Length: 93
Image (cartoon, rainbow, N blue to C red):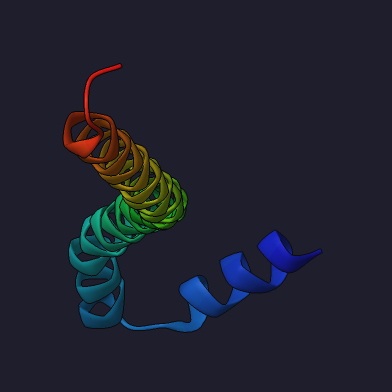
């Protein structure tokens, strides 16, 4: 039905309009192809942004875990040094 209306409209048009349409149709197809490619690129960029956000969260968790481990190690090291100082200061038996 739509094509029939389109065909009637084209036959009612002058030769200049038909020529203009035939010249612009490839541009419309190219525009549609470019638009589709941009949609795909946008989708890929969204996916990369999600992965980047996830990676950022993981790295922050790793950093916090490393800080905790370093603090625990420093505390243990301090306790061992304090214990060694106490043993070293006691008179021999």
